Length: 234
Image (cartoon, rainbow, N blue to C red; front, side):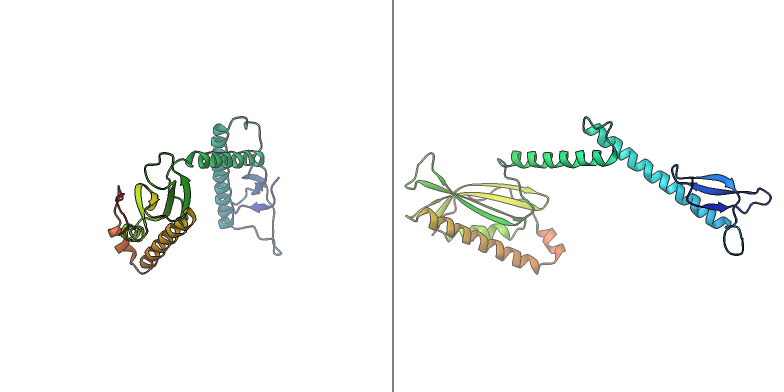
């Protein structure tokens, strides 16, 4: 039965309310006097306890409703208790996250982390005097200052951008450049040069954004659908 008894203030009724711990509801019980002076619990305390009981009942109903939805989403969980059900949900979410990551590897999707990646790949269709191709990507917040900085940095290289892929999502952008060297630099030297150029551009953009008012940044933000792929060093 309940964890305590609380008497009502009604005259002549001789009954009180107690909290049923299993049902979470107030039930009638014989009047019980509490306190050193034997006074009955006042009506405000009884009302507060009743409100608390009703709030707890609504909370349990919401939890059970959400658990029922989860059981409907994951098969084989109808007879599981709450702890086992939540464990199954966690494992299922981890599996979905891993699967999504694997499927996203072939797509240009911006991440939440600023990063610069430069890889050297062999040329499959060699139409130039070089045997390798540089695949460089940069991921960061989208801003109008980014594109002129990248263009200037790449123009200072002894290389040519033959193709670029751009994708944006929720204020983030990822740009992938395909670059071929125009002089006889080794692939290791070229990778270092491209990586340094992109990192320097990213640092300059981040520094300028730190001192820019947020309203100004939002007003200047625009959608860029292409990047000039004919940029070459002077």
